[in-house]
Structures are given as structure tokens and as C-alpha cells.
Image 1 (spheres, rainbow, N blue to C red):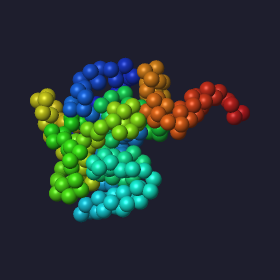
Image 2: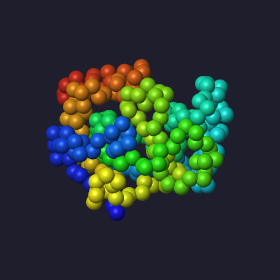
Image 3: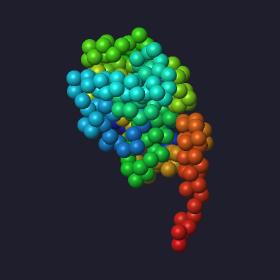
Length: 239
């Protein structure tokens, strides 16, 4: 089975689409925004520039934890440690998703204004990993699994973040029939034309979905103010 595709034709259509895809607190549909529709749906550690076969990404992560303790205390949970590393930019086998489709829309539309974007909609895996998962247990697994993190970072809270865990890191999402809706695949891509991106970002701002909310720190606030300043500039400001 192939994943489904939906072409967005106007901003109002977003509401119609998302009425048919609901998160149910992370056990229903999940959402991920790509600023370029052509990007692969893989975690960073599974992409060509970072991929190491034979679970060697977990070895690199071990190297990270041995040095990270100099900067912060680490959770006893292996998955929480992976989530922390992901949060700080390490290439891991975790892939970020959100329970909120509007959050995914923001990430799909706030960058690369001249490129078509996409929101991926995925029916959460039927196997959810717990905080008892270990490095050895992840090395033995094959496939894609869900992980519902605790409220460990403010960004996870505000972005209503969840993860898929890919074993190994380059394992793609298996497209199969939805467990809930007969005849539907468990994965859809909502294609967003570049021409609609600016209107969608403005629309999301009316709902409080902006960078200062999704990144609740000084970096996020500064980026939000910079974006607002850029929109205030006159078209002939440089003349």
C-alpha cells in the first residue's frame, strides 16, 4: 500500500482536512511539518549524511552521554536521554511529531517560502515503547515504534511533542492499512503550495502558533520579533 496524498488548495481547507485526522492525545494521528515536500521522512541518524549501520548510531550516542554529563544531569531513562540529545541537535533515531496539526503546519510554512511544503499525517504505531527500554533492547528491535515522552522540556510541552523510534535508524515508516478506517493507509502527505505559506503563517499567528510559543526561550522570542520586523518592512525599504 502507498501513502495517501492530499493537495491543499486554500487556507480554509486546513480545517476540513484536520477534522478527519485527530490525535486523541497521541494514540491517533500524529503530524509533522516539512518546509520542503521533497525531504525524506526519516530521523536525522537515518539520513545519508549521518547513517551508520549495525546500530552504530547508538554507539555515537553513548559517546555523547559520556561528555554531556559535564553540562547537565541525565535521566535514568535511556529514551529520555535520547530525547534530550535530539532536543539539542544530535543526530538520533528519534523523529519528532506533534499531536497538534497546527504546530506541524507552522514548521511546514515558516521556512523556505519559495518551496512547496508538506504536513505528514501518521497513525501512531500500535507498539509504544516505555521508559524501561534500554540500549540493548533497541538494538534487538526491527521496525518503527512510538514513544510518548514525559513533559521533560518546555518545547515538548508547547509543541505537544511525541516521537517515533526507528530501529535501525534508516528504517522507513511501513505504510499499511489504517487500523481504524478501512481502506485508508496509515500515512498521508498534505501538500502545501509555496504560494499559500505566508497566509498560513499569518493565520496560525492568530491562533497563537508562532516561534515564541513553540520555542519558549529567548532564542524563540528573538526569532519571533525578527520575523515580525521583517513583515513590517516596506517593499521599497531598500530603494
